[in-house]
Length: 157
Image 1 (cartoon, rainbow, N blue to C red):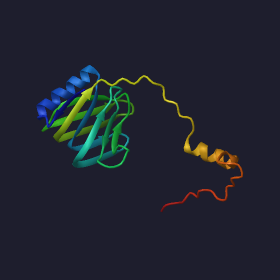
Image 2: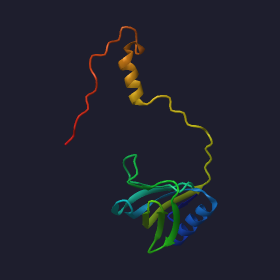
Image 3: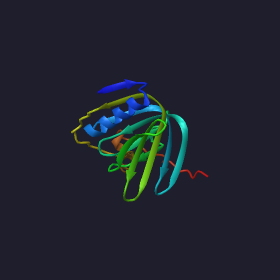
Image 4: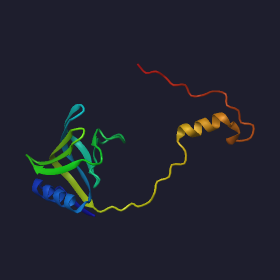
């Protein structure tokens, strides 16, 4: 894993291009803006973000809080890196057409390396399945356990 702190725009560009050539996972943190066009359109002004690119073509842009990306591109996207008044990442998808452009004013750090994960993922039960199982057989919790109420779904307006 190679990590570079506060690279110049040229160093960041060369590092990203090398990571793309080698099929590495790439993680960048920095001050950037984000523009998306495709099935919809969005614009996100300058802010501190974490950008993750995976060799399958997926690209994720995260804000400092929350677990979901604010913008993303799915696997199969094609990423290019340019120097346009700072490092610019451009992810393209052909069908349906989508473009996500991330322009860095400053890169705080860049990390790139080969990650290997060959293990199979097993999901044994979802929360909804567990809830349903307890509703059908409350004794799964303990003998004599009785269910007195269920969660109510609220309509938020």
